[in-house]
Image (cartoon, rainbow, N blue to C red; front, top):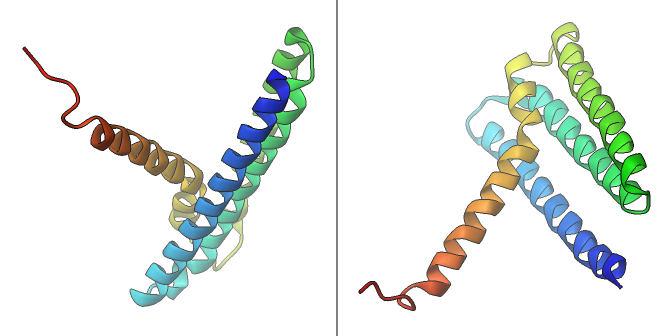
Length: 139
């Protein structure tokens, strides 16, 4: 029962985060186009794609780890951590060596997942504050 509830909530959270990542990619693309900074688009999109793949790799690892015994799950998560960070480093190395890809734009793009998760957390806190506004009284 617990695994089924986890699976339902997990799937909806993954879908929501993927949707927000796609929206963020659209926002940064439109922002670069509107501001006339077309030259940074390859770097932004490279970093954004790396962030998206990082999230998908992390989701896959979490889903596999749920079904493992605790000791194996910890080992699996540690191995996945190394692979994911190795992937991010390879994306940065790619952006340094391929001409036409701006390194700093790729770094900003790689932080897309972190930006989306931070904005989600802010929305959760603000909505909780608005919901509870006026309910508690300080004596």
